[in-house]
Length: 290
Image 1 (tube, rainbow, N blue to C red):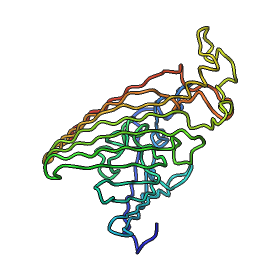
Image 2 (cartoon, rainbow, N blue to C red; image 1 turned 90 degrees about the vertical axis):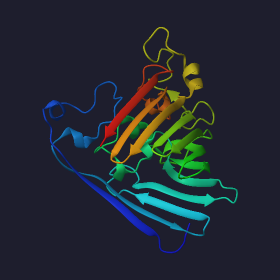
Image 3 (cartoon, helix red, strand yellow; image 1 turned 30 degrees about the horizontal axis):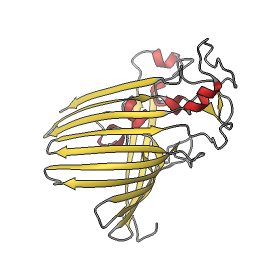
Image 4 (spheres, rainbow, N blue to C red; image 1 turned 135 degrees about the horizontal axis):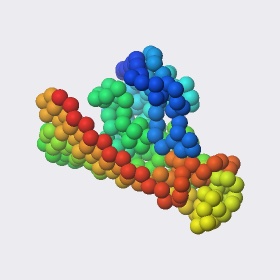
């Protein structure tokens, strides 16, 4: 997309962390053999850190077509490109958005960094909501913006984080957001499988090689069952937010299958990262502020 000079905005956050004891200073941030939480390295030692620097560019090509892009130069691993999307407002009221952006999971994950109550997102927001993928979303909105209104989203994403896809299968995302005065609530889900190439069914291999007792158990799944499961990955969540005057309260819950987030399948045999094929998770977060 190209157009006239874009609107430029930004955000910078600098942290200082001071440990109250030696637990994190003297121990690894990882708990072997598994690491089911996402602890940033800034929390493991005293000192200053540049948490994020966001530079956002946005603009219009026509009244119906808009674009936006956001980079974070502080990212040391992988691409500094965070968001890049083109939006088209159709004549019949729906909006189509394509590009790279968050996959519409959780409430906190879609809340601007500048509006967070705390210095860091919850584990739910970071691990499940702050997940950028490449895909497209169709949004339908209806209602009165000053009274009851709703937005319904239907999306398809690659399934790979900030990357092109290696297989033909895509994640399907559904989300509904409802607002009425001081109240906001919503439901969301994601259904997907592995992001590893599987054009022949043999390009993806179970960890520990192709052994039937992959988890070292007598009743462990067979190679065929591991391949057939394809690291099925799901989310199902709901949230509620109340904001009035200086008071704000939030509640959010999400559950689903761990799946490819701790994968059993890879292009080359890794060590298995979760305990069984249908391993589930559940996370909840409640906050209030005045």
